[in-house]
Length: 338
Image 1 (tube, rainbow, N blue to C red):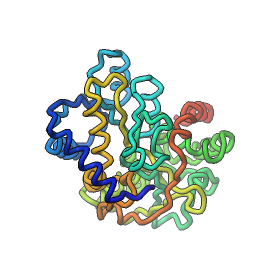
Image 2 (cartoon, rainbow, N blue to C red; image 1 turned 90 degrees about the horizontal axis):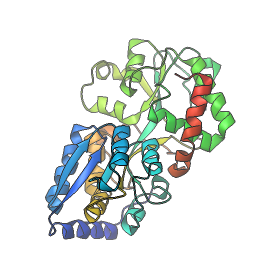
Image 3 (tube, rainbow, N blue to C red; image 1 turned 120 degrees about the horizontal axis):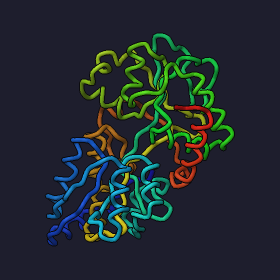
């Protein structure tokens, strides 16, 4: 990750301040479902004088809506979660390339679309969790999850989950399709139960004793450190953490990101919003407000996020990973990962 500089920060402030003199609107299509994001929007409006009009929904629904609206779409920005959805939006032809030196400098190259149609703004590590009481030799990597030692112990989400699709696509990119298929088949053999529920449910499975090992995004665990999460926070000390593949590629990171809509009627304001998301103020808020890792290097972490510990992140180019998502779904189907 690139470290933010005072020069870039000054450019960013000047850019945002300039837009405050030009009243206008921004039509934001967002699938981020976090109440805490209200602060992101209100701070941008206050700094720029630009009013944000929001359309919220599930990512696939918003992508389909923008396709159906075509050139008449009012959308200026699509804000969504996970590389797979950003790639889906690009492939649907609903985003446009943005040549912006500030964004290209602030956002690490591996977190940008190769054609500059989307940029990542916050990250979540996909972590292995385990029952500290019963598991004395937890998996050290994603590949280890397929070892026979862990038969009947693993809780993990379904193959339709975008986080798992992107994780498997990253394994394909790092290790090849054959190794990825062997891994997926091994994980299916080691499942403690049929895939069900969300990431928090995988963590609750350890507390309830349904499984002894699970896979979840970091921010679900960090959130349970910050505030009370039913069925998790009270017994959270029972759960140990493994940042996978620390002697190899590092922990897989998935994104929350955004791109300017292909037919944005307020393109200038859309670009200013993307610049704002890359600024230190918004980057700090991603961590403080939603327990995520900032995309921009050098930005301070929230206390509960920092408490998870330092780790090596996989810096693989996510544009390359996105190309392997169709192959990942094919493998899931072939091995019977429900």
